[in-house]
Length: 239
Image (tube, rainbow, N blue to C red; front, side):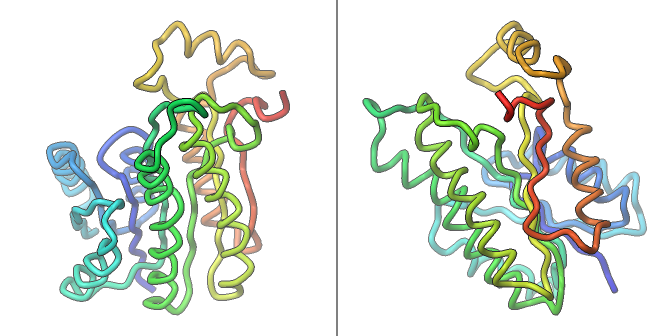
């Protein structure tokens, strides 16, 4: 059976590394992006140079748009492809709290982290006979901090959605979650804050993107895993 994966938010950071990893595992790819066209084109060129035996497609779409799934479906039909691995990686990470939260902030975060992952998975399971879904969540969902309220609430919901979908779509589809911790410095922090955060974890070592990629490979190859959560955070969720 052919191996074709869709990675949302594939143009940079974790999404880019996931795409490179999947290609090394023999997957052709649909590289989704929202606005970083230059980044996704660079990635596509790099993949084509390294893996001439695979196919790489670029799909642009805004996950906040209600017609996203319809556009994705039309795109796949035109390309005559069927996706059998779905990686929900696209993310929005903006600060708000109980004083600053707004409807628009909630709408945007939940569209990207909950509404569209649900609708995309529904479509995914209708166009393939069997397959896998992996959601990239965040170890912060096990805590109750409110400095990124919309983000954390929507990611908490994504984790619960992962459990519900893994039960509903079995046995044809396996659905699991990866929960990263201190992987890369965020745009709202700096290297010093990141380093201190790593030192505050039990293992005191930054897991790095490699921890996500090894978890990804484990879940893909483990035929008995569904409804599982793998923490990539040096034990930070224990604190």
